[in-house]
Structure formats: C-alpha cells, structure tokens
Image (tube, rainbow, N blue to C red; front, side, top):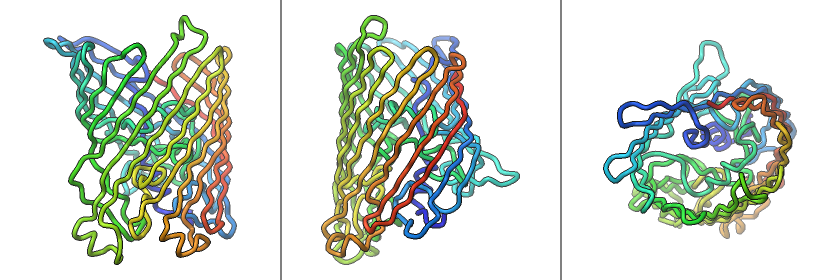
Length: 422
C-alpha cells in the first residue's frame, strides 16, 4: 500500500455502478396516479489479494496492489443499493423520478463513503446518493432527463462487464471502500455519475440516440503541476446504439454502440499563478468508443475499445496532462466470452488501458518516469444462479501494472461470494 498513489486509492474506492431501477423488476405498487417501484441489491465477497512486495513497484496510476498480501470481506464492483422510482402519465407526458441510495458493507473513513475504507472497531458504512433525476417525454418524440445519473460515454462498457456481478480487480483490498474496480481503468474509462440534462430519442427499429450537456469536471488536482478548474462551458456527451434480434424468437441477438465525450478545461487565475512557466492555459479533452455485444445459443461475446486525447485514464480527466498541460493520449479495450448452460455461466475476459507520454515528457526521458504505461488484467469467473434472485460467484483475477521506467507490479486475486437482487 505504501507505494500506491492517492489516485489508485481514491478512484478504486469511488466507483459506482448501474442504475438498478433499470436492471431488475423490483417491488412495485400504485399510489394515486403514480406507480412506485423499489429495487436494489446486497452483495458480499471474501477476497484474497496477493501483492508485489519487491523493489521497483512504485507506479503513479498503477492499479495492481503492492506491499503485503491482504484478505477482506467486502463489496464487489456493485455497492448495495436501494432505488426508488416513480412514474405517471400526466396530460401528454410520461413523467418519472428516481432517487438511488447506495450503501456499502465496509466501514467508511474520514475521506467519506467514496474514500478508502477504515476496517477498525466501532466504524460504520456510509451512503452514496448517486442518483437523483426526473424525466418527461412521450413515445412519439423521446425523453428528457434532468438531474444526476450515469453518464453516456463508456456506459455500455461497464454494463456489459461480466465482473459487474463479481469483483474483478480490487483497486485496494487491505482497506476496502464501497466497491472494487472490476475492469475500470483496465479496459475502459469509468463512465461516472454526473449532473446532466440529456435527450433520448424513441426507439426506431432498434436505433437509439442520446445526447446531453453535463457538469464539466476539473482535472484531478495534485497529480500534475498544471491544474485546470475553471469551467465556462459544459461537458458534452452523446451516444448511438443499434440492438438487433429478439431473445424469444431469434437465434442471434446483439447490440452495436458508439459514444463520444468532450470538454474544455481551463486554468483559473489562481491555477495560472501556481502552474509552471510555459504551461498551457486551456485544453480540450475528447474521446470516442465503440463496442459490439452478440449472443448465440448459450454463448455471449463482447468487444470494446476506446481512444482519447486529454481525457486521461481510469476516470475522466485523471492524469490527463503533463506538468506543462500537454495532452496525454490514451486508449484501451477488452474482449469477453461467456457460456451459459442450465444455471451456470462460465466467463473469461482480458483487457488493458494504456497511457502515452507527451512530447515534453519524452524530452525529459521516458526511462525517468514512473507514470503508468499500462494497466491490464485477465479474469476467469463462474456465476451460479442459486435462485432467480441470488447469484453465487467465484473469480480469479490477475492484474498487472507497468510504468514507463520499467517498474511493474502484479496482483493475484481470488473472490468468493454472492449477490441478491430484488
């Protein structure tokens, strides 16, 4: 843990996942003109992590653990959840509101529910209120959403990640927070939950388009000398998808999608004063992605990839620039194959995320940089449906991080546990 960076700790503990009101049927009832749905999950896993304890393992942005081995009883990639969704038809509009509360089973530290955990006596978990939005629209023209919800860019990448029901890479196991990493930062950039105003079209023979404006994000401070915290324009995201096949009637089903994200980041007057001489005063960070999910018989495959400039790695605008504010390029992706028979699903996946040095960093000599070059992992999992609500899970995960100066760290992890949806 001593050679891990604040980035790995903060990002691994701050990861939040699917809007469960869209994932399960839940418990519903009517109250006046409203239909109310209550849904959620609870999960727990025993996780053992074997960490690198040798020399030359320090990596800025590395996601494999270092130091002593650890064991934990913790949440997986999903925290627990309790989601309230209410819908109604009022005049010519379908209206809805969603509020989602996401507690963990692990104790929170002073950093809060999205910081690293504090496994000590007399502690308590916190609640992450990540969802609060309302919608209005009609099947004839589409839906408008206003509030805080999951993003558009890289959303399908995480929703189709098989470790969603398990653990994947731990992101730090000695003091677990609300969630593990899964494949976040190791195959895709985290989609995140952001304040937004978005529009989604009706479904046109399988086609959907969504676009919106989002709260602009600051470049994560403290990870470079150049900070960018001024916002005078929104972040923009958009996505298009096409779903084909009917699971009840067709032998082959699937989905194709693509997304974009873009934002201008600027240095404030205070940032300019603290930035090194010659640092860029603004930059635009943008990325695009694409994926394919296809199922046939009991088999299901997923291929996903992304590429960006000035968006960083693991989270949006994390490690996005050099100290002089030059944009780092990044890319990555993952491949996944699973087979389901009876109540058992077997799955394997491999993915990696790559970060590139800028021209000014290369001029200083790549061999001097302990910045992360790649985070990659291989996952094997077995998922057993004990009942229609309970899934028991066993996973083995190997995570490896490498730096430009040759430093490396490898983590071997096994996880055993389960999750219940209602």
